[in-house]
Image (tube, rainbow, N blue to C red; front, side, top):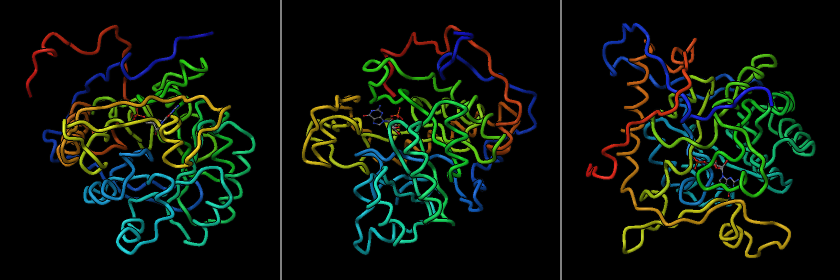
Length: 334
Ligand code: 5GP
């Protein structure tokens, strides 16, 4: 145990002398060139492949803002006309697990954007699977994960990923840290893995743990090319059903609830490493998107950055005991 590892809530960004007078001068759209020759263009934020988040309606709505969505795995196989159009958006990724049948399916579709997602991306078998995916889809933009170590990042990038996805135990609906004692504070994981990626080419996606718009800004400043979020986008109309009391059911994808929805059976040897929750509905995602993008734009003006690339340049973090003044939180009405 050498040094303390940090999370988003342990740090703040330090403002710099800035010439960016207006948030309107900040351009959040960027092109990311992957390690293996392909590229994607958009606002580099991606809704997670979770039920209630990675839906077609979410992909359509976020796509209007050039933001990305990773479709939930089973939706990947939906071939109806209207949904096919959403799947073909340049901002839509489809998600598969470590499953040959799913890989064959996306290969037949000649999928352009692919997330290959498993809970533990450090498995050597997973690294081999990413190699095969790259052989079958040489031109695809591939995100693979999750890992949290420099070695894990480099293994996935060398195997065929354009970006390695970083995060174990950081998700709000995740209980892996409690169940297994395994994890890595997200900010440090992103910083260390982004540095490791530079040596081999490619980059990283920060996945999980973003609660506030400022956390997305911190993830970019720490070196993430893209930021993935689940809970932040959950509870909106685009995610599915809001009940009569105004609540949405939202759960981690390793919960028994998720297993029952997608596999109709729960395997005895697999304990749930996620939470099932009822969260207040948040209305259309449009308002949340405006807040999020507004927050990141504002962060850019504080850091003299006209783009996310500039936000990442030499950003200075300070470690703090308290990031937020909570005095008025219980009384807040808007
Ligand atoms: P959030 O943005 O909600 O904090 O984190 C989203 C991420 O949590 C997802 O992209 C995924 O990596 C992770 N996640 C989703 N469901 C589960 C789960 O049931 N267990 C664990 N360990 N992680 C999950």
